[in-house]
Length: 110
Image 1 (spheres, helix red, strand yellow):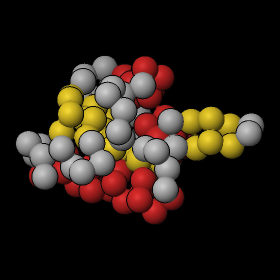
Image 2: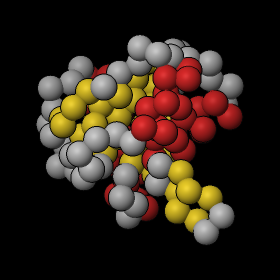
Image 3: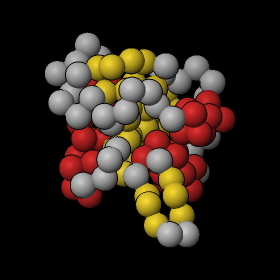
Image 4: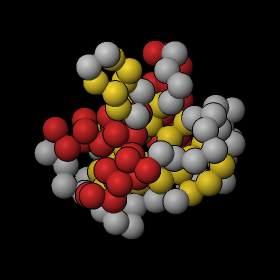
């Protein structure tokens, strides 16, 4: 699938499932410093717009998370959007964010 460590590959699997279940353009998953995971898909409501990564970070924060180990975004986009990256780095500046194509190919790690 990718050149990621097994724990990060799990994030990709969760992100792909969120994307596939909802039919959203993106899915994302984050892992906190205790090993718990949170996943989300793109939110596109008339009154609320969140990228999948922003939504996954919001789910983690609303559960009391104070730090992240890693994140994965599954998207056809060529880069992870800046607001989502900023949300991850608000919690942990050095947390890697893996961008993975819908077929599971690692595109980049930020």
